[in-house]
Length: 351
Image (cartoon, rainbow, N blue to C red; front, side, top):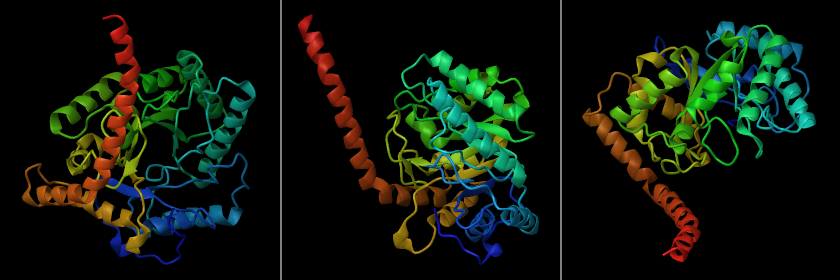
């Protein structure tokens, strides 16, 4: 995460846009600092961690920090109900088959939601969880039960389920997983979905050209429904299509490429949703690259696929990321070949 800053450079924030693009920013030394960090890279929406994401227990929010957060939201014109998307702790697994561990996750989850409501934040992003090898349907029920319990103990914050890359026993890589959890949630006004572009691509959904992009969203509307779409995570992918690897890349450098993001920022159904970058930072640049990416994405609004400047920019970015893509493609090819060897041996036995 970027270092906490106290100076504000409001002029870099583009006003009056229908799309709300920003990034996951740091909140060191007080949650209110996330707002100045967001402003300094031109965010019109942003994400943060409400506490240490790798610890079960963290100190309560300080009253002075809560007050400052509210004041900064008002001063710098951020709507905390719709433009701020905290990310849940990586430790939380509401699907854990172990009752004691699931209770620990539930308590941490509810603590996060209560922090949201102290800050007036209306959305909270959550990785659905992992079955850890247990029955998938029972896992989906456990996740929904945890959400139902948390909703009963809070007032307004919406739990936003993120689609996942499909690695191991993690659920949520298929749209049907998200739809089933939503179906089991009692108060459906308190649940939504965040589509992560890297995760979708890793799970096998091709978003790189108009026809397939449109097909994905048609499936989303049919299976989940646009009424549940609450946020977007904007990430290119270091790994190839269907790799099931959650490896975020900077916009335009990865296997998704710039066209996927041009399609996203020009999709009317996504207007007004918080779109959050979770792309890598590059310390060598001396500044936060996500600020550049925000401006790049905003520049794509209204641009056509055959726009000469867009094509030139896409080509330049792909060239910059070519070496890293080749490395990951080789790793993926080697993995597929390794997985295929025992299958080949088995087929020979029956020849």
